Amino acid sequence: MMTDRYQSPLSERYASKEMQYIFSPDMKFRTWRRLWIALAETEKELGLAITQEQIDELKAHKDDINYEVAKEREALVRHDVMSHVYAYGVQCPKAKGIIHLGATSCYVGDNTDIIVMAEALKLVKKKLINVIAELAKFAEEYKALPTLAFTHFQPAQPTTVGKRATLWLQEFMMDLEDLDYVLSSLKLLGSKGTTGTQASFLELFDGDHETIDKIDGMIAKKLGFEECYAVSGQTYSRKVDTRVLNVLAGIAASAHKMSNDIRLLQHLKEIEEPFEKNQIGSSAMAYKRNPMRSERIASLARFVMADAMNPAITSATQWFERTLDDSANKRLSIPEGFLATDGILDLCLNVVDGLVVYPKVIEKRLRSELPFMATENIMMDAVKAGGDRQELHERIRELSMEAGKNVKVHGQENNLLELIANDPAFNMTLDELEKSMDPAKYTGRSKEQVDTFLKNVVDPVLKSNAKLLGLKAEITV
Image (cartoon, rainbow, N blue to C red; front, side):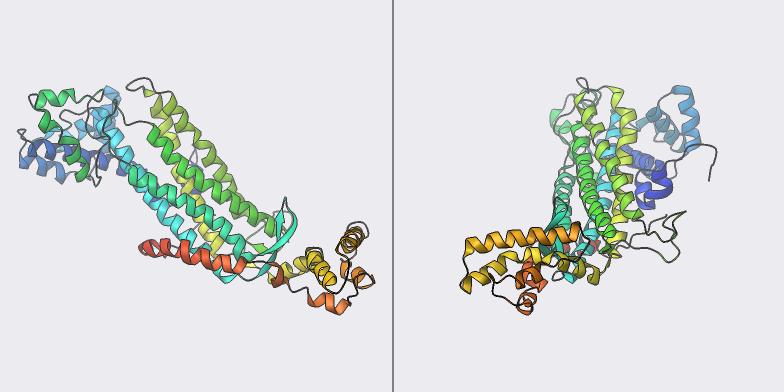
């Protein structure tokens, strides 16, 4: 560990080793070499004078990057791609003359960016699927547990703990749909030359357009893609980066919403995130159990949502066939957006997997508000017994105000039921009224909605992605 210079918290504290590898120099430069091999193989297959011996030599050194040679060369020529072309040539003397033949720097740079983003999206998808699976288990387990719902963070008609979880779950399902669409639509840049016109290949293949038309498709297949973008400038459209980061921002927004709800529920002592045996909540207040994981989710999520602006601005401000004001920004915004999202999903998985529910606290709070929620049912029962609906409505309103004042001003328990029982207009005993206080009577179709949602929407997705399930998240601090 180096202690005398800045190190990114995304690498030190938040992102997994898997995501860090995807954006590592090894991944980048090994992909460059795979692209050079794919280009050479394609050119050989289309008739250029490239030998199998040269191809084999390139393949023999595709993973052992001679970084020191490249670094020394870059200090001299100030060009990263040509420095690595040179370094590869040092290892492959027989093939050095055909490395990067007909290509421009964006052939390796931009195609690698697409490949890296595709791999990163696959890892994000795997983690997102597992978060969805854990939330589905939670929703199923607590689908019938009544809880006080809130609108405007004011007590509202009851729902269930599981039904509330489906609201979080549905947003993550929407994110998965967006991710699948963007991932399936990613294409390679291909090899289109300095301004996207493939002029260099016209020279290499003596103006044979029919042969040149095959190049991009052949390269794409060798790298595991279906096709390349049909047209480009020197680079692929930076709109692609915008679409990718918007997916990450969507996941961040969903995670932020869930983490906020959990933080509020932890304040109410109804639901808590995991809290380890030796974990310290506060340096001063030893009793505290701060929701630090949910707070970290919210913190990282804000970073990702704001980060999505970077590729949008970059895309909007590219000049004609390309300008280089995208490069420094892309080196920061794309990797850091993915690293932060990776950390968010690990935290989400850890939190959801270990959520602690306190049914007694939930029931106590619900019952303290339930008499207000039950007033319409009480009124209807009194009408059936011969009461006047309009008169009863006014009496319910007056008694509710009195009970509310007792709670807020005098700090007493909610005595609305006693007040109603003592009012001859209702002709109902306290015992009769208390029998109507079963919380399950007021949750509507919450349980049935959870069952339907899990069965028809979530389960098919989990089944089709079964091979991705089983992930357990590790968080460092």
